[in-house]
Amino acid sequence: MQILFLKTVFGFYLLSTSFYLWHAIRPKISIRRSAFALFLAAFVLQTLLLLFRWYTAGYLPVTNLFSTQFFFSWALALCYLYFELRYRIHATGLFVIFLTLLLLGSALPRNPSIPPLIPALDTVLFTLHVIFSFTGYAFFAMAFSVAVMFLIQKRLQTAILPDLALLRKINEEAVFLGFCLFTLCMVMGSIWAQIAWGYYFSWNIKSVWSSIVWLFYGGMCHAKFIRRWQGTGYAWLTIAGFGVVLFTYLGIGLLMQSNHPLE
Amino acid sequence: MMRRIWSICCSLKLAIVLTSMITGIAVIGSLVMHFNPQLFGGLNALSWHQWHNDYGSRAPLLSSWFYLTGFLLMLLAINTGCCFTEWLLRIRSSWRKTGEYLIHLGFILIIVAYFWGSFTGTRSEGERFNIGQTRAVAALPGHYLRLDAFEPVMNANGRPVDMKSSVSLLKGDRIVHSGFIHSNTPLIYNNLTIVPASYGQETIGYNILLTELNRTARIATGSTISLKDQIRLNILEFQSDAYRVGDQIIARGTDAINPAIFIRVSRNNESIWSGWLFLREPLPLLLQQAGFDFVVQSPILRFYSLLTLNTDPGMRLALIGSICMTIGVLFALFSFYYKRQRGDRPDIS
Image 1 (cartoon, rainbow over the protein chains, first blue to last red):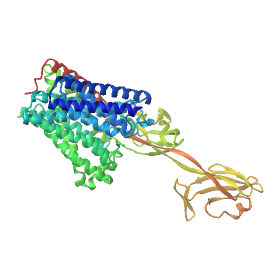
Image 2: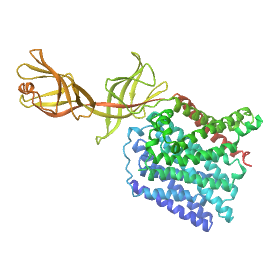
Image 3: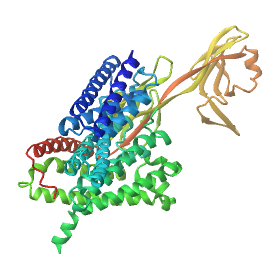
């Protein structure tokens, strides 16, 4: 039943992406509206499924690969929805929808059953840590998407994409919001580590790279005040920052042993 | 001159340079750390000065990134502190940045707390406690920790998922704190945090079948076995793994490798022999004649708890820093939307 529901969500996102791409090639209000309506339908369905899974499990299910992919894809969709409603970015955030599709698509063949919660994860600090972490990552992904569009727009000067000033504004906003959420993620994770292990910072590669992500984006929140780094420089920094995020989330989880395994 | 030094200390560019340097060094350092666990594996289990003495000083090249990152973080904290002070001096005109500067303050407090705790705190990972055992807490002179009870929690498949230890912290003979310790529920007293690390089982004796007498008995410290001809065997001590050095018996460990018992044999309450007996060696003739011929049915096991006892004098300061950061984030978000709503983005040139 859940898989059927999930496939419907995936289908709606896929159709929405196709409509946005169509709109990018042949801009038409009706196409854009259809794309957004499909996206909204997919997001509402996904939110209902997430709430259903949360309710039936009794905890936010983010303890295995299927659940984290599902939750991360939802966070990405939420992030897109925020910017779409606020700035009407349309196809500018396509990368984020692609990521959503990728995560959902790779989650589809997996078993959606929810494992029982082990006592080590049975704390509200874990739930908050995960929520802030994935929503923070989602905003960093959006910043990356917008930064790439900024560089493309700077070169092509096309009417399809928003103007450079708006792209820069969205990029800075995405970085700022991502940084705020990631700060809360770090705070919750540290308090949780203190009560679970007796120290609030663990010397392992995941924790060090999470600190690197925080410092990097903290530095970026300052860099926007320096003229030389505004615009293009900031876009390149955003792209580099997302590389750091990708390594922290995927690289370490897949390639190295850490206390945050992906499986 | 002083003004110039101060403006360098408060410099935004300095903050960016330091952040970039820390980020770059930490990227390389994290990989060095990951691929040299023999050198950095103990960082979570030792205080910094212990780690420096035992590991860091012996591999200066590999550990140089660690010291350099620490030094640069201190510089960044000073830089952030100067920026924060500068903001405080002109708070009337820039109160809207309260959120951002609370994040700065939180960062400073956490860095100071972490250095303080890492240098002067103590780490003690996986200290073994038997049920009922009381041990001195090395980090808190005059304090003792007693394990009152222990119970592992298993899931439906029989796999351990949690460990529940009931402990009492004593100062002299007086209990100053007590409670249950399990996952996400530490015992915190002043700067001391006690969390469960693991648990194990040790063999403290055996259930046996006396083959000649055709009845069961226990071989464990304090047990008594009645044999033929009014002979009684009192087990005064059980060692699960012991070895003989001359006339001495030395306990080696808790794994049941070479079990031995110290016994007293008496007839009609009159002691006739006492000494150590290795259970894997042939029994004395006296005991064989009395019917002490047995097969082991099962070991008698006892749980023990492994607890981590860490002290961190900076712990509370770090918590205050975290609270500052959290409030700062909320303020910053509020002021961000407020400024955007007013079309007020004065910081962007």
